[in-house]
Length: 292
Ligand SMILES: [Cu+2]
Image 1 (tube, protein in one colour):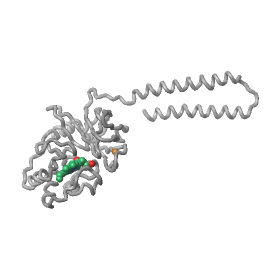
Image 2 (tube, helix red, strand yellow):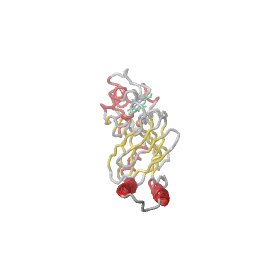
Image 3 (cartoon, rainbow, N blue to C red):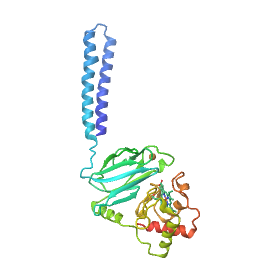
Image 4 (cartoon, rainbow, N blue to C red):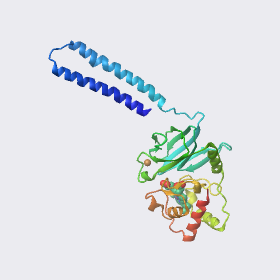
């Protein structure tokens, strides 16, 4: 639709340009005046542009009103909050009505329109998933919206498209489109509290999480609820990447991130845990990886 727009406006502009050039050529070759100047000015100088520009304006206004059918009506609604430098994603659990919070990954069912309510909590960001939709700014204190629809299952990468500080480049996200059944199963798993730590190593990892006071910023539902300064980690092991599209989720990446997030995303609002001993760090990484 946007390309149709561009072509119509470009075509009309090109026609006018060619016509003016032809008239210019004619006027240079002929000396006598075939039309009275007053008529010429009123006709070609006033009436012609008024009629043409008004109709183009009317047409483009009418078309742009159809451009974004922004409605949450009957569509699945997901809210996305942009933060420096990650994305908080919230769903409403259809069973319990409770909120499900995740990060940096938007799961959607294919073939249905999905309405994203967009907001930002610090500076202006912009959501851009090039394969699915245009950009939409995310502005603190204001809710904007964007309707997405994926026709094919797959993983679509998105990126913050409005400069928002040091780690703007490492503020990516993934839209995961799957069949409605798979989506429902995913949502049901996300609604569950964190998996229990049922081995000695996992229990050691969970203990390290609490000892290091990670819960000051992170929630693991069922373990430590509350803070939302950092991404919800209840199901962090199920996500494709950590650090907003920076590292693939696996034990090694988690350990590296926890030991020194500043080396991976300098300036990030998470302190390094350099006083963790090796065994506890490994256990903590294993514990987080197991939170599927
Ligand atoms: Cu940004």
